[in-house]
Length: 283
Figure: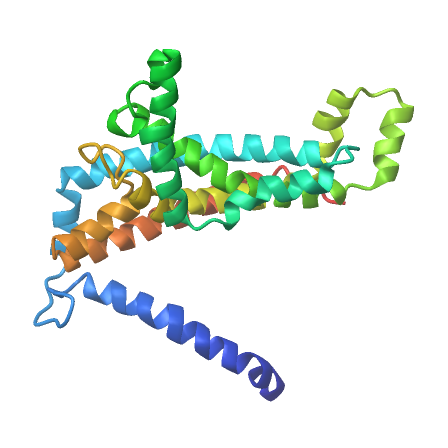
């Protein structure tokens, strides 16, 4: 026990100070009239009741759920496709790995500013020059197209990182298994669906979990690209909680919404991991 505490004591202490204590305090504040500086009394579940009665909270939560589902599918589909490309016998495979991964290194705020210029100026200018009706108006100013602009930027940023996860899964498959499938006359497509994907199910579990968590916690790109507009139609739950707490001064309800979001993310992640684990092949 002494040896365990000698090596694990400091990390556990840091983990408790940085994560556990603030989380417990945050939960406590949801039951008080906290104004960001001090509390004077306990208010029970009134902050939660007020949060659930806020129609903007529910509309934002529905939009976030839609964003998570669409980005989850597209990010992983693109990432898996990129992984297949860079693990094939291409001379430029190493260059392509770096090229596809670079967008992940760009900060979310910088990324949002860059793509804001692309959607508001570059694409609009080209559309007016070549008469592309679909792009003549900035997508960020359209209540329907702004969602897809947010999806495009998210996929562009996150696919490279998830590609690394899938590359790890693909190269972990033993060559003997792949050679045996070739000897048996299996086509590349059949090998992909009957051998590669089942044997790298663990990579899918990890990538789906990371994408799910990232979708619910998306904030910086949302702020920099759309700011929740137009008319708050692209406001994700993280941005909504920040606005409620720091812009409107509703720290009690803002913190209670954050706790609700934590429970939703935890439940969604638990279900996803549990379901994904069933498809993993023991090797």
